[in-house]
Image 1: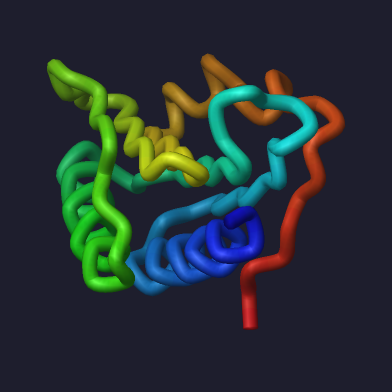
Image 2: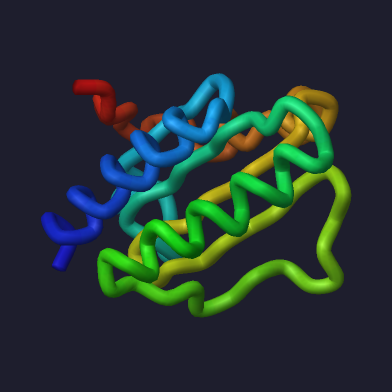
Length: 116
């Protein structure tokens, strides 16, 4: 299953790029996290953009056969988390991304290329 999630993770990163997410980071966290195989952290340019990214990503991955297992509720205006099982996506506005610096929590995780 990890290879399938890697393909989905790359497709998700590309979809977010098409929808103007910034600073997209795709990590292989199989060795650093018991929760997921892959992790994406991306920056939304505004609060409305955050909501749009969340909806479009969920729709895109649903078409690929993956449903959101869990979303953070109540929804935050600064940070959204979508759990697809082997892939967890963090969408954050810039101020939240700088404050929480999730990248540092996964020190040792391998960054994966997702661009064509």
